[in-house]
Length: 431
Image 1: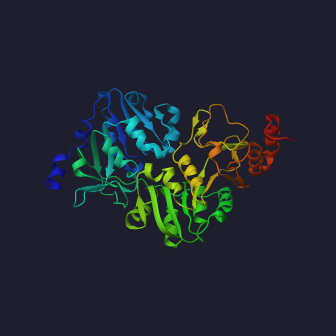
Image 2 (image 1 turned 180 degrees about the vertical axis):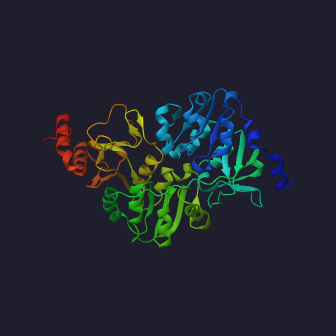
Image 3 (image 1 turned 180 degrees about the horizontal axis):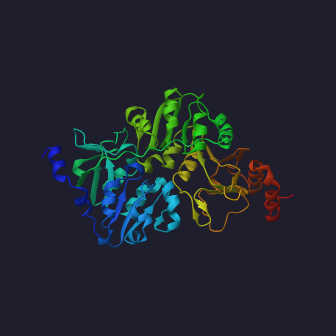
């Protein structure tokens, strides 16, 4: 059979494809814009036929019924290994589960824990050699997911651009069912940088040496750091997420080396850039985030944000108490990789205070102790530099006394005396 013949033989309607899902199935879906919304919606509509169906993915962009309807959630249980804005809004409903995992362990999670019976993904149109491209967001788990699952269903979408990289394609021989449904890829606008973000970036940017390889996260702070690098030279990128700022820095000649990432998330311009620029290689997250691989890159600079830190340098990125706000992601991976890199630097950033929008109360993000049940995301022994708008705390391999003094020095001045008193009372430091 020709590839076109195979394609036609495997082509089904959305209804036909959804009818293949049975009770007790474990479905793994590519995340974000690689999630086949029409296919999953068709599956969800049949929820009354199911018992104990599990769906694993991350950063969902569509309010599926298994989020908002408890009756559906009883039959289709969603598990998220990284929360996006929609999951954050709906987590209090209790309709889905959160699976904390370092992104470097995603392959092991899929192979050893999830063990999917069915893998689903949006892909590009088939090329002349019978390959479908996973696109700017689907390389993340596309290869391992499709290889581990017993059944592979793809939703062909002409709006998915082909991207360069490794493990970025799937052949028609490895596909069981094809559906066709075009959907616009999610576009995520850039988050504006606040004045505090810019002040934090001013501490970090001078530390970045020409010729470094950078990893920078998502959001206003990340943008402040990224755009602040526009006077640097000969930078390369090794990061989870390829961002709009990297398009800008490449255009200015600042990024002249390779751009290696796990996915691209932003505007259509970025998605097209990811496929057209020969500097870019998009690879599975468990490879990109491997700390041992990161450690082999000299002068590696990692910049990530967090929610809170305590006086000894423990870092919280996931939530406060039992309230989930974000997820583990690649924080540990890049912190550990960067600190093992020759000349490497790991910066974890946070505003020194938080203002409650409802009450106006201002609290310190540097605390003596976290609320009860708060998970520690990055252990203090791994932390190198913590940064607020007030400066940089050098925490790596320091004593408790030194750590406390460093942390007090970057806390908001209004809270320093209170923090010092708490540290003295606890015996961390002397008067």
